[in-house]
Image (cartoon, rainbow over all chains, first blue to last red):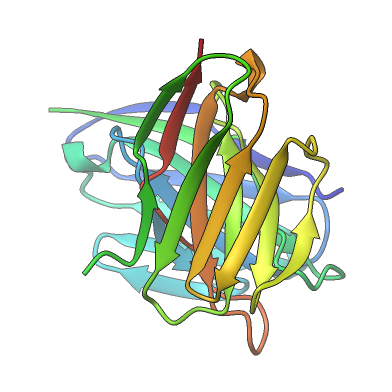
Length: 111
Length: 114
């Protein structure tokens, strides 16, 4: 099956810093999503981004489908950004919306 | 007002018992899912229903049986619970028509089997 690798596995930053999280995947995809799991366990959908660039406030994401990677940018980090960020993909040849999740990047923002 | 809701939020039970988790979504989506998140935070899909039809059935012990009475509801029944079933179970939904869609997750059910 498709492999999804996220880097870095852990990231500790001061409040106000910027960060870039990366997601590499091993096969062509028709669905890529970024999620934030907050410290209380809630999974929030950040972006649905199989290709191109999207922005939502301090967060933006870019997927380069031909090179099989996606980047999540967080600017001016706040403590509420802490948590685990997951990338999830659906392979191009699988039509049943079976998302495969990466192992996540744990982000800790220090005040 | 909640988009995807699950009950109960916490479930503590003894080995061998049978339990159910319920999920409801009010987003008008046509596809619902069950995921399992283990102690290392790894998320894996278990089942998916589209318009009440089972479309994804991963390699899951047959002690786990999903049921979708209508498009807005998806339940998970677990028989003869084992220690290894302890995990967080998430329900999610999406709108599938026209290709992949963003998935929205419920708050999770934390299951602890003693």
